[in-house]
Image 1 (cartoon, rainbow, N blue to C red):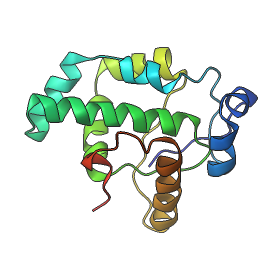
Image 2 (tube, helix red, strand yellow):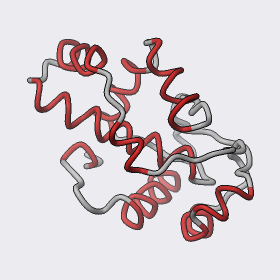
Image 3 (cartoon, helix red, strand yellow):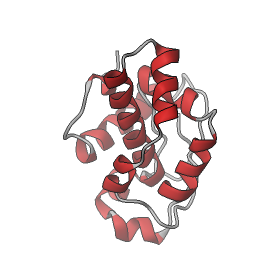
Length: 150
């Protein structure tokens, strides 16, 4: 689950619809949110290779999963809410977060560190509902099976 404190007015100007949809009092300030296109263009072949190896995926599946992970992290960096990744996106996140590339991605691309925390069973249902609403509103095009909550 992504836990954040409060977003900055920059994010509100950047995407007021996202702020209105996902507003909750637990997100850190994002000083310069990246566009989704910039996030999608970030490449880290070593991370994709590790995702493929550790999760038993072929190169195309790993590339698609890494793409979806980057999109989830972008959404988490600008959403003012606790968001819950799917199991497969979370598994890729666990791999990515252990790399030097993760800190660089957060600092240089997202403009904020996206903290990973373990899921809280008590709020899981409502957090998944918030996540689905944000995904539907802002990431609906090009969604893959990696976004399915099974």
